[in-house]
Image (cartoon, rainbow, N blue to C red; front, side):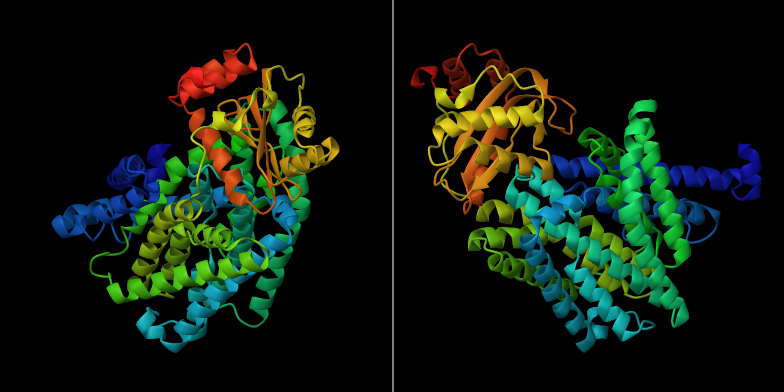
Length: 575
């Protein structure tokens, strides 16, 4: 069978070259990606570097013959490589779509709308305006038209990178916080609109005008409308059946990828781009509460560790990054991208009622571009819209904004902190024998204890606010921990109540483990940073396996506090 296929398209030599090229690309990309993560940098940095080393920047200059054999510019090997790259980028967009939680966006309401709107408009106007004024200097391809080019630059300056933002928030222990949820919700709205706009822009670039463009516009709107209504409902109804009657995680993984590839094929046929279909399919499937966090993580790991490295490494095969590096252009793109996005989101957050410090943090969090920006730039390069100079400048901007977003947020949200989690707790705030067996019961039980500590709040109010927040995004953080929380205008000082469950309660954590230690966090309405700090303290304290085990084995509230203090390096006699 293999020889029949080879005779029809790939002879043994070409098949050998294709398999070797994929092995070399994937192997070096994964290796350098792991090295990047060891130095606390995004894996994409190492994956792109792998492509640069294997591409015209380095490998082709050292050994042109070997490069031409392994990565030919045309022929069956190039077709095979390009096919793998297209599939890889489509699957990467599925991961981005799975990050979009439409119900979360809807519940955020005004704040997410303000941040997203100003965070798109200001960088779009800056980018598109500058592109119209100086298109050639900014890197427009000589064969491209000024208006589509300006629209592309505006979109490129305003889009975000959901997977990168999520990773940054996880690293800062902020993903489950209200501020983290706001940033994610605003980014979801941002990207959904940005990718729709770019898909239509590609349709016009590919020569669809007049009636053809109208058909594409109507078809796109119908596809999005049906996918996010009927398609979303069907996915929600199908997932429980698939999970009940197929192996895990293979059944769900096969379902998700099949739907994504079908949607990709449809949008490619429609004339926009395959990646848009994959993205919308991810949004429709990912919005179902039946898609467990552990399953999402499995899909994420499978795609980002196999297909994503192939795509990002392939970027370096197309462009000479040294010859095409234009420092003035890189600086211009970087300034527009950072200033436009940070200032735009800052203004939206301030108008929505956040403090100035929190608003700056939102701005820098939304400024991370990462993988999505690079995909956008690659498609524009393939479409003949931008030169290699601008392509390299956008790739550099995407990497730099991803690198600075986390440190800037961390610096902006720094505050005088307690030395340890134990200093925030007393024996009255600890319940060692939770009777609850469900999330709803656990929240009610912890809220009842919190009500005895907060005289100005009734138990029903606490219970209702925490439960509503839990429905927006589950608060299981893995390792047997959960952090249900709420911000309340009536309280002036943050409060923690911790409960221990012997059997564990399913808070839908990414590792699939039930939560045995559940921390109820109540913080003032106008103080985002105290909630973030408490989340950080919990994560740091229970990073120690010994502390975790001691807390689970404690026979009294005093022993529980002692376990936290000893784990933090304090004397148990200080309890």
